[in-house]
Length: 114
Length: 114
DNA sequence: CCATCATTTCCATTATTCTGGAATTATGGA
DNA sequence: TCCATAATTCCAGAATAATGGAAATGATGG
Image 1 (spheres, chains in turn green, orange, blue, yellow):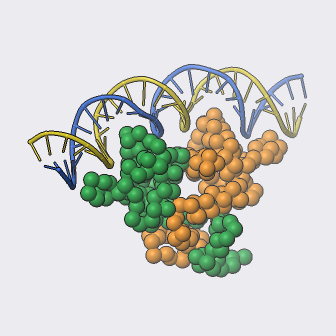
Image 2 (cartoon, each protein chain N blue to C red):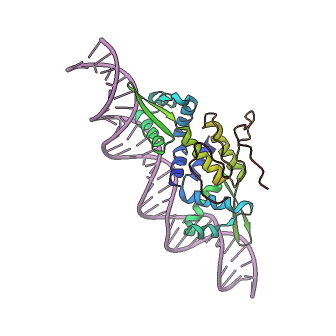
């Protein structure tokens, strides 16, 4: 539960949510910290603070590459978070996205459950 | 985005997450405030503070019923939150729930009666 | 109305989080 | 080595959130 709360609070902040979305867009390769700071127009200390926060919760990982530190989203952990919410906070209902375009073929066929 | 951040931060707090889960369990009928305070062992002012927080974000609704105020989870809004996360924060990956007992490669969890 | 119970509001206190300048560490190149 | 660049840590102030006692509001039955 603590882990879940931590992960939620990591995303419950505009700057961090934006940063995380950039990393999601960037995919597995990730982005150098500075690139994120540039996009979000953040002073380095503030940027570092937020990236560290995301990293502490496991939603994000970092690796050194040359003089850059590359961050990337950890999709596995993000999956677990969404999984938790779906299972524990949706009362057994689908909680699947209902937005246009995207049809959830990824869902394992929600077998009826009376 | 503000809405999403607000909803996330509503859940990003242990007391509120617990309260919300109680309401999810309780389903559409909901629970009187006092019942929640009893379960979570909270002084009334603290309880009210957190319920109001959840209600402000729309994750929860309340109605007066006799001398009780009944709270219930708003599954529609919760769905939207999960939908947002799935679509915007999962990079197109499944992020799908394992509905009921189904095991997913990355989900080490289990437990919790069906 | 009055007593009582349920809940909220008020308010002060404490705790936590956010912010960013300045100093520091790390890396690579000339 | 020395310099430039990338990023983090240090630190302190500002802002926001959580806590809960006490008083106020609201609802119901007598």
